Image 1 (tube, rainbow, N blue to C red):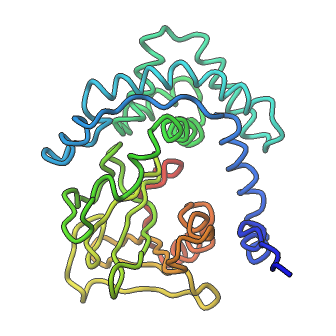
Image 2: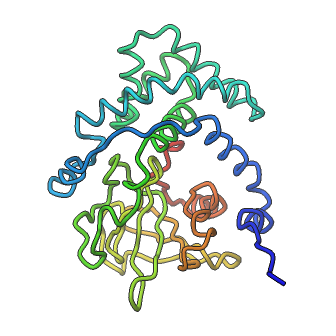
Image 3: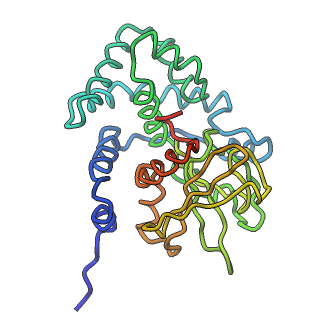
Length: 290
């Protein structure tokens, strides 16, 4: 008799039942966006990122292409959220954004998306304040749309490091969109492990140095330490005392099991963020909180 296959998400939520609502909303946003055709990001854009260390979506041609694609899709997405079974604040925030879009010219709508994509925090915050918009909700939803419009192949570390021993791109920002990482992922490589960083915006993974702060670049081990929660052997906090920041690091299964994908989601380890907050540490890379 064949053993029954267990659903890794069900097992995960059984372990952390308080995350069930987060998981439901996370997947609803995916459903609201649907499966749009991804934008074209050719090999020459990848090569430019490799040689000039300029993220693809910060290259003007492809930034404009992404802004246009989000512009065409966003009203449908926010309308779906406004009518869905989601928390009232999300519904209200979606309706407020839709109302604001009706009063904007085409150029203003595209400028707002550009402010998100270029991470112009001051300009975007000013726009949201002037129009009474929920800044974190609008920004994070636009990033989720961007993630769906990004070709899946570009999100894989193999694209940026065909030879894992000699990665061409090894920066502390995402090669696709330029955001800072939100989670780290230790993957099996030869007799040890290598560190992948995970973008909290477009979802790209890429290789980074195993030792050192992914935010300020500190490599002084005397100014770094780890915090390992008692009841979570799969995740830990890598803490930098030089900049008082941390990154959640996944060190669970290394066989490509479905659990890996779950742990790469930032929402799935919010309990560790609460622990870090109690210790006065700073979180980076999350589009809701930036």
